[in-house]
Image (cartoon, rainbow, N blue to C red; front, top):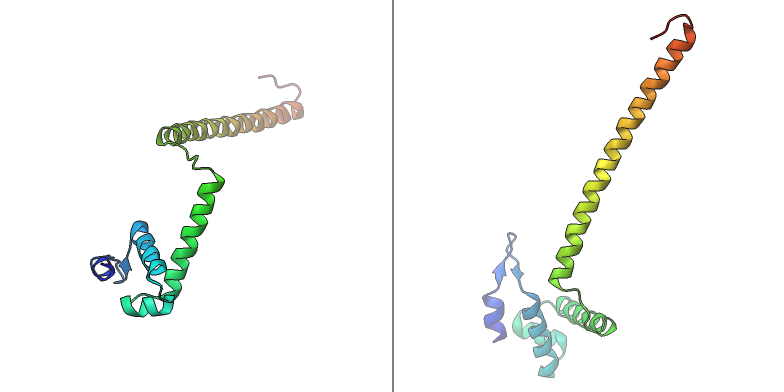
Length: 125
């Protein structure tokens, strides 16, 4: 089963085999239930020992995070709503930034005009 899974894995542009997270989890579970040491298991299936250890570590840390969060993940609707709100806020920030730049430019022009008027008090515009 593992051999088929590895043999049928997608290949990256560099020729490396790409496994899904489900496939990696399956391999880790198979190794842990096999009773073999990781190096022996990896030799038999053509895997890299450090990679399998890394997959197991990631699986455990993911399980711990799930327990900490008590499985309370955001729904897709909530995430979409937050993304939309984020885009609206970015747009509002951009508009406000543009308004500030325009007002600064107007202030600079008014200050220059006032300097010119103060230099020539007889000149009224």
